[in-house]
Amino acid sequence: MTAPAGATDALDVRLEAGASPRVAAVCTVAQLFPVPERGLMSGIDKRPVDGPVRVLTHGVLGDVQGDREHHGGIFKAVYAVSREMRRAWGAAIDRELPDGFFGENLATEGIDVDEAMIGERWRIGSALLEASSPRTPCATFSARMGERTWARRFTAAGRCGAYLRVIEEGEIRAGDGIDVVARPEHGVSVGDVFRGLDAAQASALRDWSAETSTILYEGVARAASTVLERAGETGIDARLRSTGRGLGLGMGL
Image 1: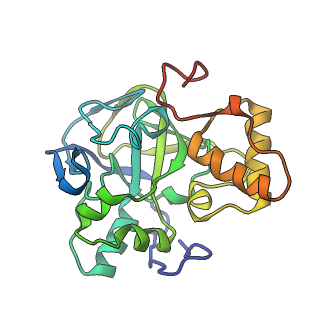
Image 2 (image 1 turned 45 degrees about the horizontal axis):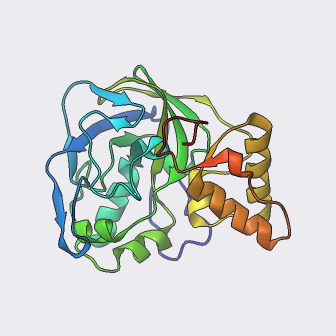
């Protein structure tokens, strides 16, 4: 796994050669995490659980979000982080970071989560998931890490994990394989969005969304549209972008 272009604090993240992609741990909220400066109780404190976990359209059964304005919703139903990336952070800051510490629902092994294409689909257990958005580090994440400048440092490294949309509900458990069943040809990854799109990438994402009638998460659509409009091009159609917090996909979502 090579360092992302443009990263200023690149991590030495390596996947085991020939390893089969799998879920190393499924994590759910262990206890609410207080964030006094934001006046909320966060669900970022997730820890591994045994046995199958039900994954529903709006997220992992039993999961909670303290900040519903910026977290949760259909496009942020499940958060996945590669165990390799989290362990690389642990080595970089000389700290033990167990599964779930970044607030992830799925800790993976053997797959570069950050480089999943927007719209890429994974079959895991009986569920079908789709990569939809990068994770934007926030003040809650910084509080969890106990480092005021953590969000900036995390962003500089260019690795974010991926939010996933649930296409088919089902059950997932630790040890389940990750089968990539569909990968769009637009070539724009979750990590690309996180690190910043160029005009060609933004155009490819816009055209793919229009050609396939795929609704994009609002944050991704906004990032692409900003780049396109600065280049004098048309942004992503309003009908093809959503926050994912409404009644249903394509119905005021």
